[in-house]
Image 1: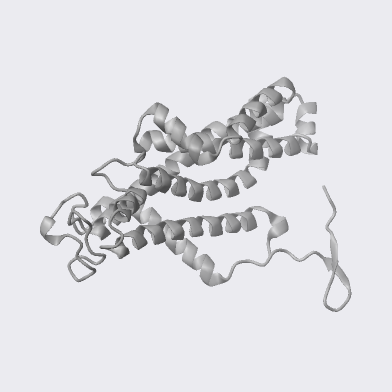
Image 2: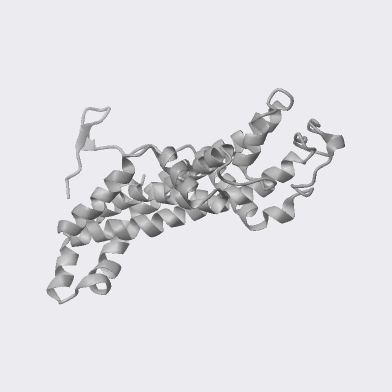
Length: 291
């Protein structure tokens, strides 16, 4: 372990390096509020919609915000608020699914590469490097096209694209942790393999950065869902997601500009909250970074 660096304080005396300043309280509270709202949408989105999100009313096309339709209507007379609520449920669930795929693929690969080393490490990391060589969105589009168009396939593809980042981080952490004294002590007492070393000693002590990275890739997964649905490779009509609402509104931006702002702002806020919470997780999980 490296020793703490020293810096010169304002009074001219040496002291330990200052930890990174925490985000303002209002930012953290706002992020938590956004994520709690996302949880509500995930669990009860369909029951919160004031109208059927797929119901069309051609007599109410492009209605502006009002008492009847708080966010107005789209080109088919569908209530934008209802589609945003239902679409939020689909988008958040899809992002969580992609994160689960990324963890399910990347974490075992990274741990196996770091723990076993040798040719196993070399072979697994060359596959990871090959995946990282492709632009992420292009690779996701290619995988989606090969598997078939649809939200499930699209987000499975996103999970595959995000898995290499998890694998490299897990490998680096495993390489560091397996050299620790307590792991060597466990080996000296005869502990071996998955049950003796990896699960009780390596996994609990290498998982903290992976949790932080998971929060970050959740935001990336939401952006990927929006991108793929915007390209009509994700949610298919008449279903809704924030990316699908954005794609539909883009075609009629001049007639109903608010319709394109609402999903864009929702996606931006969710990514913002995920990144802020990644910083918070880093503070909570790493004692060296606590203020």
